[in-house]
Length: 290
Length: 277
Image 1 (cartoon, rainbow over the protein chains, first blue to last red):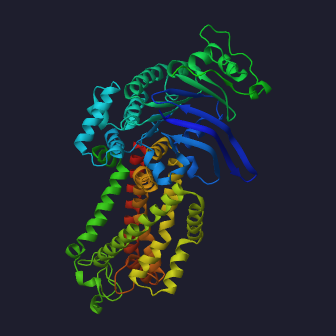
Image 2: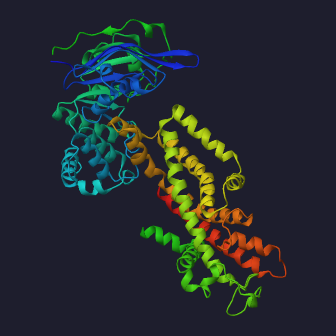
């Protein structure tokens, strides 16, 4: 069976006035069907640009050079035209963002925006059918009074409510791949945990593959089947969640784990910003039995 | 809507604005009904009654050829408003589309469009309009053209700035991610967020367009006689100040009332729409 997403030796350069700056140094990553994969790393390590490349958004900018291959459902993205890539977005792949409230346009009610999303997948859908579909989808994310929510503007709903709306919208067209870029970082922790639980149930029910981008190891441990740790544009460790957490092999992974605050206190240990160890070759754990 | 009306009517200043604007608009629409001498809008002479101070039936006096000033002011309002609406209905769409394109598309498109806008903005508006009117014949149509040409860059600036900040918002990225094209993002996602600013500016500008057209007419480059215009009426009468004061004061007051009214309403709208964001 082909992987939903297969990235090989992906490089990314930004061209500036003072030459080019390499941002991704050849990263490889694969996501099987229905698999939940996390990409973990600190700010600026290249997590989000990877997501943008998968979506085909970055390739369209000038001053950007992308190398390596990105295969989505067995098709090389580079071989697709701009139009074909745009056609994949919103139908075969979709995305959830950090701040759900700002991801919704403040001037339209939720219902209008939901209809627009549904029209992406099914252009001829009538106003009434769209409303019914939206209500069902909202019901799946535990929103009972869908009538009120669909008639509301984003700023009239809570962050958690908006996040659930975003999840429902992202999965509305049954995408093969869902990219979650630090979902709910803008929400408080309890709401974040709730919506993540919801998201996990939803993607399991729909057999959706997920690329989960985060710097929060606690969340990743709960959510992901497999983990890739990224540091300065290089993958430094990968393996099943259990394997990576049980036996972190790379110095950077250990540092990242040590940086998680603990309930028992003790403060955050002193960790060097950069260390020669962090640039050591990647540690690859054996893949789990398929 | 209810809330908007309530705020508009509960603040004494904006209430005054609404009343003044309503007055001006009603005067313009029903000019031929209200005016005691509708024919005086045209080329009429009545040397028996020339240059009379305010008295019945000419409550604002008569001009140098005996025409009723009050009647002429009513018709001048009509022309000023039509001019204002026509100018804005051309300048606003042009300015908005250019602003959206420059702000959203970026790159060399942004560079070219915004520099072009800057060129127009760098020439003082009245000078620009005067030079256009100087080259072309000073007719009503060319007057509109000249004022339109100097008006659109302001809308481009406003919309460009909003677009630049909205472009970074999450919902724009979200729309791009679900495959929306540039036209959809520009007109369906970003434009509605610019509407409050555009509407406010339009209301304020209606007053300013009247002022600018009057200034052009004052300089003899705008509306040509015998068509009544507030600016040219002021200009004509200014030579006979202070003895024949009614020739100047009433048209000038009429300009004041219109500009003041539109400004008050514009300020009120800015408050209301700003608060809703």
